[in-house]
Image (cartoon, rainbow, N blue to C red; front, side, top):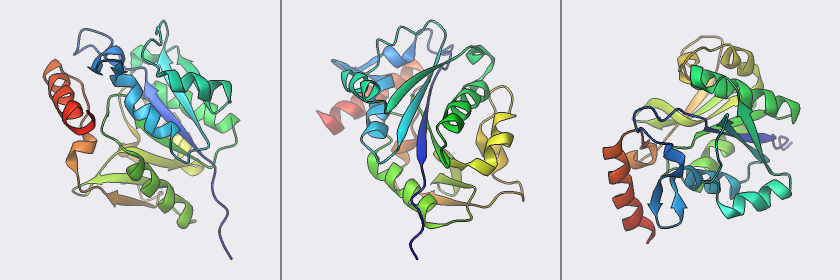
Length: 214
């Protein structure tokens, strides 16, 4: 008997304060017309996710949203949620995304970070495939030499604990608890985990992006 395909909603965390960058990093260009915040979002929208919730901070101009995202918004496949407590840390953005996914009747959320421009569709497909295949898993995480890192999928059973996190604590802090069963899907290319949170990192990402995609 084939298992029912689960309803997985993307939660795209784009409400970070960018304190270390001194500027709203989502709007930084990796190349002309391509903003940092929009790159992984397009990968999510091109994937088999049911829909994508984009969590932003109060006052975000959303100038970094790709044109294509607006089309998905019109189709109801992409929505913007404002996190009033974004200043207090990533846990609050995650809580906002979980609430929206719960209202959509999702079975799991795929958490993505807006500052990881090298996450690709294959990576997301492998995570979703693993979550659909194994009925009993509470989470599926990407693995960097065995270390769980985002993107990650959290099943409904983990949402109360994830929503109770504080500050900048991510869901990774829950994975070692005996209450949860999960799988780490190893990723060969460490570049995919690169997150842009310094100006040096931004310069490096621009070079790599230009080499890979231009």
